[in-house]
Amino acid sequence: MRLLDLTQRTKHASIAIDTELLNFDYYHQLVTPALIATLNDLKKTSDYAGISKSLVTLIASWDLLDADGTPFPLDLDRLQNEVPVLFQAQVLHEIVTGIFQGEVAATQLVS
Image (cartoon, rainbow, N blue to C red; front, side, top):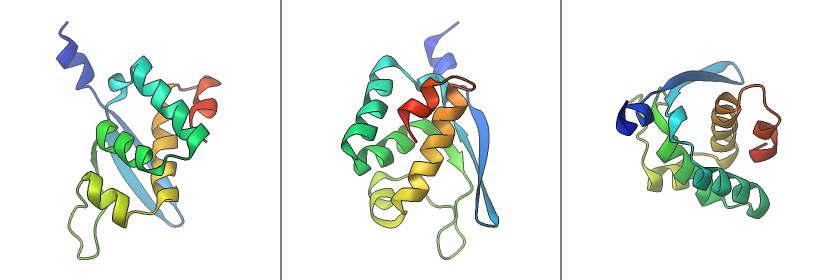
């Protein structure tokens, strides 16, 4: 097994936002002890830029569209300036919950 192959594996998830559904795939094997520490720090410090950085790292693809109906890119600058932080936090929470499915650790990392 190659590490590169392992870290490129994705899982699918979706979250309901009001009456719409966001679908996305994320790299569930990219979570390292360093990333877990970063996620824990996000909760303690309210580092909103860190949420965007984590999403850019972890999301492989999503079906979020911009105002003209084209796919919204996973671009750090655009995420930080155009996408609501609460929405980003919901997506990150779903990813963390999916990674640590069924474990108490998920709710302690990001909520």
